[in-house]
Image (cartoon, rainbow over all chains, first blue to last red; front, side):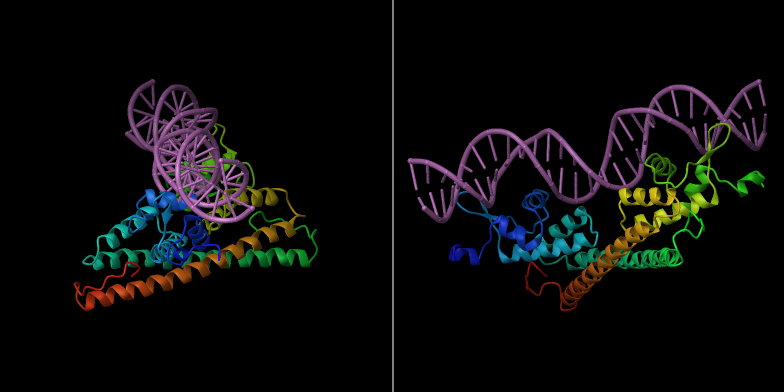
Length: 140
Length: 140
DNA sequence: CTACGATCTGGAGCGAGGTCTAGATCAAGT
DNA sequence: ACTTGATCTAGACCTCGCTCCAGATCGTAG
């Protein structure tokens, strides 16, 4: 294997980028923004070495971001986790609030989906009846 | 009534803002960006008068935006509708592509939801067992 | 007629979330 | 030693989608 044995335990920024889907730029940006739970370790030469726990946390971040959690909230959450045990109630509140937003978002998307489906049906019908059937409704 | 009879047929920008949830700034911005199907009529004094059809179109825009359609796509769609009959196939393609994105988004959100639900469960359990149970897992 | 609120235009500004550049350094293969 | 590619830092820059400002005008109520 081309990587050292240590690579099994710690990953370079590039490897983490691959595994998380984030760019190396974004990884550095997140770190600067205090979105990580702990400081990232470095090699003697100054290169970042990520642990499996770092990657797990980043994967959670990715999921939360995907679902629309703002970086500010993520930062707050990271700070709570960094703070250690004792603030679980607040973490719970934060996550639960986010879950409610996600639920609302899912519902909104489903409504949009029906609208789209309906409109797709309208166009499909137009096409089936021939393109030049003369019907002209700007809202259709 | 304080508004004239004509108000029943055409609305001021402020009234449209109320009905669509968009700000008057945004309404003017959308117009400048070419997101509307037709040019908005004006009073002799230069004030915009929106028709019911304008409002309907805007409500569709709102739904599509809510579901994450970029302004550029919305603009493209508006251009197609403005172009009149004959391009229904392309409108269909545009909407269907968007529907697929919406579906993917819903699925992603549902995955996030399970993750959150699970984590909420973890914290709830911690709290139930007492805050200082000493267990410390950064990913939890 | 006057006042006052709503609207007008063009253009600047803003917040979120990255994304990229420059120039230097590190590390691994040959 | 030399080359090549990944990483480093600080900071500038970018897109998206609004949002707001200044200064003028409209229009309706009193």
